[in-house]
Length: 507
Image (tube, rainbow, N blue to C red; front, top):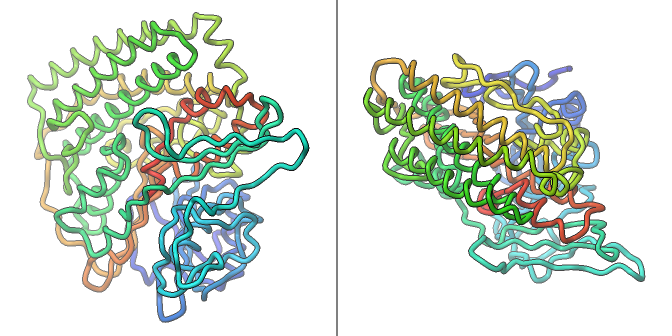
């Protein structure tokens, strides 16, 4: 691949903002399109005001085969030729940039808001409305399939139960779904905007609440970021303890998901067992920091609390017992024909669709793609303790469930190894203030997939931009594709097989 107008960096490496090339718009566009065509993933695409009437557009592309990240940029006025028609991975990023900064990507095939908030540029709006007024969900256009026997099924944004708001618009012929459009952003929280001017006393709190079930994953990405920008790496013992917390977070969520999938097809033994075992894994996380969801594990420079030798022994015993329990519960799924009949060939995605849209995490690995930050872009303890990539080729609900089961087994083995070999030393070092005028990309494999944090500091060493991409941001589109040609009644099962985050999308 021609790396063109870009700088190559590693995961967690910071460079001077002046080291990032500023290409012409067409050169930048060509670089992104050709890199994506060569198999690189578009990890982030975002804009930053550069001077009056101009914006700096940054792209971060991830090369799984080499473990390198390629960063490029360009300057644009209030419009530029859209990248999406030639690089579908950019479709949501460009819509987000248009909403945030009123920059129009000319030729975008479906330009509409992502989160329904006001543009940051007073008096300007990229969607044809005056004075930068927000576009409300009630006046949103949805894609429509035409035909006499076509009907629409609308679900949400208000749901039964306690889940967060999201609207799902199905275009159906009878029971068959021809197209699903997903509209989120009903509770946009402004987290990225709140991070500007940090780091401060509330920054870590905001980060841990990007997605409440991924507190450890996002906090780890932030910790790596801050340590890189200050030039002070976390202590080796702390990196091991972070890895333990991250894998416990994966265990709790994967176990809960397998139980929920069993419940969606009415198979109560696994559903009941996994609900209880998930609680066991959450309680193990609480033993690290006092919080079952991992808030308070990660601190800049390391972790807040240590584990004594006695603590490690007790945790090993609890983990071994929970591992046996989850093995019994999950193996019931694979030996029950009625479960397999509902899982197999339901909600199929292809590897080409995953590559085209840049999907990450479990959905991509369930299509046979060997993409995992722990393996392709290792940082922290994963540089020294390799984590194999768990894949399955069929791309259906079964594959997404089975990949979770493979990862559960490997996460348990990883944690037991870390508990045995955790290096001695301090669990936290003092982190200096971030350096001025720096750019850093921090990737972490959260339990849903690739987490990408990009931080840019100003001349005072404060964050002038902090961009977060939760894996749900792109993977919701994968769910929409998986529902094509499925009966609408399969939506709950397909949805749970992805189990994506609303709040992780609505930043």
